[in-house]
Amino acid sequence: QVQLVESGGGLVQPGGSLRLSCAASGSFFSIYAMGWYRQAPGKQRELVAPITSPGTTNYADSVKGRFSISRDNAKNTVYLQMTSLKPEDTAVYYCYAEIQRATAGPHFQYWGQGTLVTVSE
Image (cartoon, rainbow, N blue to C red; front, top):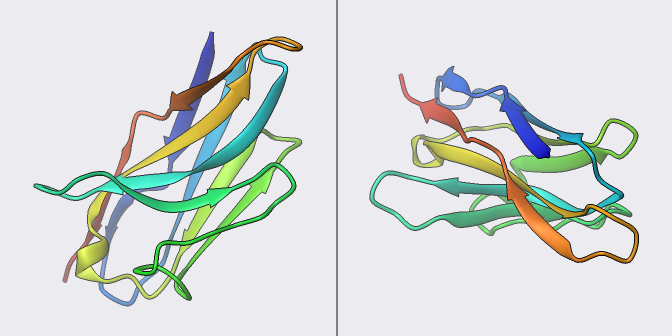
């Protein structure tokens, strides 16, 4: 059983900062890509930022320069540092991880339960 548990969401004023965390637990061989999606009310899920196992990152244009993704492979954890938050960043944020459960086995994508980020006065 593999679980991704997120934390760190909440209510923040425009211009503020939040840090999301997502920790993978359970039985598995290796974690490859990790990252964050978000889904705002009435909109499609959007890829915010992926990060590879060695640490190569990418960002959606809407968050470049404001968000920073990182990971701690020893802790099986991915982080999303969000700064200069805007009301349009309001969404449920979901982490994901590409996990190989056994040596030479297939890779599967696992998802966190989602954490709500609300940016409002």
